[in-house]
Image (cartoon, rainbow, N blue to C red; front, side):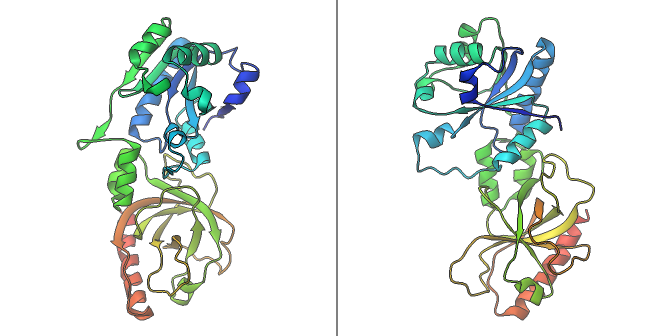
Length: 325
């Protein structure tokens, strides 16, 4: 994708980095960059082209909900760098990461528009979702943009829904937590992508005849424990919105390994590649991306390794059929 300029808000205060170019701005968290976000960005890009502006995303860190409820840990659909890659793939020119603090939380809608959007970001167009609220106490609405940014084009994106279900990050999280990968992917407009570095595991898969690559997925929502299939890539920075040619069909187990005794259960992502031959230790420390496409079954405990082995065999057959479609 194109090169994306990431600007931290403290740098904005020192010198307006944006003095030279105006912004076609969209504001939000963009977790997952689902179909609703994609529509916002499409409108923002169009306005940028019409007005000779830069497509600019204003996002907040921490998430305002986490600022007001510090104990709230929102499970993320994206790791931070995945979000930046996704925005670059969607044609965004720059991302302004605004630190969300006491001062910002107290800005009235008027000050938010005049100080932040006009003075710092030179905003000539604003595109927001149909339910967007901003400013102190979330009192600002679309009409405030019209009042305080009279020269700017103000656009409201309608909601995007598929099969009667609105695309929203919270709905996608719910589907993932219910193992409904297909529905989550429909609203994402892409396959859910897990990424991590391959770790040395207990090598149990190898003894069963199904060597697995175990990845440690940091700060990203894992679907409900169970068996899934999809496609793996053995590179860093896998594309977010399309799966590369060299992808490898795979089956993965997300779970606590109920059949194997262990001291401290830890959620693991163990992937078995359904094609190709890999040396026993060839994959350690390599980055891996996994595009999840189907759920195969829930987690269950087996009476011993033979039963487990037979089940893995059956799961692999099922995964081969699904990934061959």
